[in-house]
Structures are given as structure tokens and as C-alpha cells.
Image 1: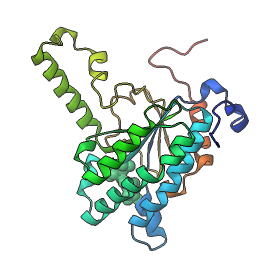
Image 2 (image 1 turned 135 degrees about the vertical axis):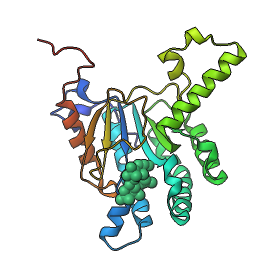
Image 3 (image 1 turned 90 degrees about the vertical axis):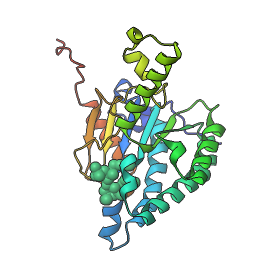
Image 4 (image 1 turned 45 degrees about the vertical axis):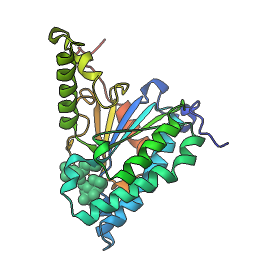
Length: 253
Ligand code: IPE
Ligand code: IPE
Ligand code: MG
């Protein structure tokens, strides 16, 4: 089988030391509409074209040994878009969840979702759930889609779970700390994000992973998401590797 080996990142990126490759990457996939409009096409063509970018980027990330790739695919705010576009996106997501199963299996990928996914249309939700279930036993990269996701919604949902546990008597108010909150996020096993990439030039977070990006390095590129390929990921990683991460400490040496 053609499983992408994660063992030789130095062959792919010889100029980046292995320890400088981010373990957890988040991507705000933006610019699909602008990409389509450039050709005079309707916006939804850009979403379809964006699937190829997802495929190539996920494969490249797995090959590099990145352990978690989290892609922002649909925000809680995106419901405000025209119904036709939302419906199209939901169908695209359903098809993606089904069509990618062989590739996910081949590469040992663990597919997951975060967000208020139960509120998605039933067909989309069940296709996603099934792909999650099928890939749960794999041991490769986590490919996580943020869907009907909002960073504030995630924190509010975690706060509600804390309140429920306090009322149930399984958690004392005095024990509510960062770890208690982190344990109640959508994916409690999610590690902190090292690098957030945003395509299509926008210098904002747009409600993506507020908790998990506290010390993430931000890399913004002009490339529109449908044009994003592995070479663009490598460029972002080179930029990340050149940064000095201090985490509030003083510069050493
Ligand atoms: C990102 O591309 C995809 C989603 C938000 C679903 P956009 O659809 O936001 O494209 P632009 O930003 O309008 O070009
Ligand atoms: C962020 O892109 C959401 C996703 C990529 C899913 P948007 O296009 O929705 O963000 P804004 O409106 O430019 O902030
Ligand atoms: Mg956008």
C-alpha cells in the first residue's frame, strides 16, 4: 500500500531541522469565493476546487510527520451565507467524508471533527461520524475538521459542561482550572497548536480555536485556498522554523 512514510522529513525539507517542524498545525482555509470570482465563476466552484488543496496538504502534512492537522471548514458564523452556498458546502462535506475513506485508510489517518457537528444536516453528520468511527483505530496523523465551529462556542460549551459536573457533584468549584476546562473542549486530546496558517491575506482569526492557539505562530499567505499545495505548506513551515518562540520567557544566551 502507498502509505506515506513520516520517517524522512529531512528528505522533503532538508533545510528545516526535524525539531522545528510544527507538531500541530491549524489552517484557516480562506479565499475560495475570491478564487472562483477571479475566473468569473460562481463562488461555490471555489469550494469544490478547495478539496484538492485539502487532499494535497493533508498528504504532505502526514509525510512530514505532523501529528495533528486541524482545518477550519465551516464556522458558526457561516450559516449567515446564502442558503444555496450553505447547502452546497454541506453536500461537499458529506461527499468528502465518504470519498476520502480509502485515502484515510491508506495513510493510517485518524479523522475527527470539532464543533457543534450534531447540528449539521443529518446526512452530512452521519457520513462524518462514520468516517470518524472507521478511522478511530488508526495510528497516524489526526486530520481534524472544524465544522459548525466557533472558538467562543467551544468555550461556552466547555463552561456548560463544567457547570453540569459541579451540579452533579463530580467537580468542585475550587478544582476548576485550565486543565479542567481543556478536558471539556470538543476534542480533549487535542494538543496546543504550534502554527496557524491563514490563506487569502486576511490578518484575523475569525473565531478559530481561541483556546488552543494561545502561543501559536501565525503565518498569513496571499495564496487563495484552492491554489494551496504542499509547496505552500513547506514555505509556511520554513517561516515558522525561523521564528523564535519564547512563551513569555527571556531570550536565551
Ligand atoms: C473559505 O472561503 C471557505 C469557507 C469559509 C467555507 P470563502 O468562501 O470564505 O472565500 P472568500 O473569503 O469569500 O474568498
Ligand atoms: C473563516 O473564513 C471561516 C472558515 C475558513 C471556515 P471566513 O471567510 O468565514 O471569515 P471572515 O468572514 O473573512 O472573517
Ligand atoms: Mg472568506
